[in-house]
Image (cartoon, rainbow, N blue to C red):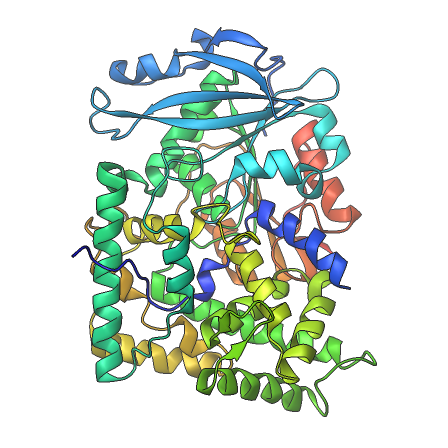
Length: 523
């Protein structure tokens, strides 16, 4: 009998920014309430190979990938699309290769170059971001000056995807409730993780061992070449900042203009990242409650402490007795928390959270389930629009050595609950997933300096719950040529949803090469 494909309880970290998902969320939630860029023209319709002068100094065995002929064809009504071949294993470029699917939004006029975009994750689709949400994450001014190239990184979406669960099995996994703090629950969670890892290996095959961030960063240099750019111009959000910093570490001389928005500290361990996020989300909850209580329709009475306690009591009641949504689906605490977290990524969506909490306090979790489905990219018909949750596990298990000792994880769980009495227990025991993973980590967290790179722009948002502001500070400090731009605001990342100060700073940097003053604060 084949193993049941399950995953341990949902982690807060699975709710990445993914600019495309965030853009889609904004639409749905609204219903509820310095190197000079080159002068290349970019790809044209028809067959075009990478120009030899943009290849750079690469090993001879990789030259066929850098000089490959790429066919750019009209697609999705107004874009150009192509498939780009890259080695599956960069240590064996003569072995198997995989395809990356890319989509190009052409500039309105004569482009100054191409900007490669990554929306976050790991698991976010740059293809979908360009296709569906580009106007929400970039300005008219930037799109008028640069082509924007979106791609699905290796293992993501259209690009040789990681596959673990069917849609029905993913529904079952999200509905599963396991408490690993008990002896029986710990063993059940361990077995669930083992079965999930085994099924991922069976369904995905050899690629599962090569979806790490360094390999994805090496892919980006091939994308730079086939886009005919001697330097990589790059816009990365959230996890995309780690991907971009890794690229800068590998190819400092190929860095053009690079914006890293919502920085991740590359020197932080998985356990440090989880603890920092627990603190940041707890702070965001308090900010939300304070804002909610200033309105007349807020269901959270009393002081801010009282309002937060109401939320905690509601979550505890759902843990004890799951609620039934209008479509008949059972909403457990894990799913409820996933829905609760999503609007915290953007304070413009806080009114939707208020509506969801109001209904849930009356016993109706339907809106909260809708938010959870939106975060999981589940369609109304029960299909899932992406494989982002599967990619998330696959990449992180390769990027981070994780604590798997039970006593140590229990100690971490106590720290998490102290840091976030509201959400901490839902973040614990994450190491179980990777304990059973069929491939060992290939990265060790370390500071990234990227010496020799052109000036880089790091952006941090002071009230960011998913990538705490301190991470952007750390990233900017580590990168030898980086400056830090700060947005004093709530929510995850800045460019595309920030004020004119943020937009001008980013656009001036990309278009004119004007590096903002280090420490500039936009409020």
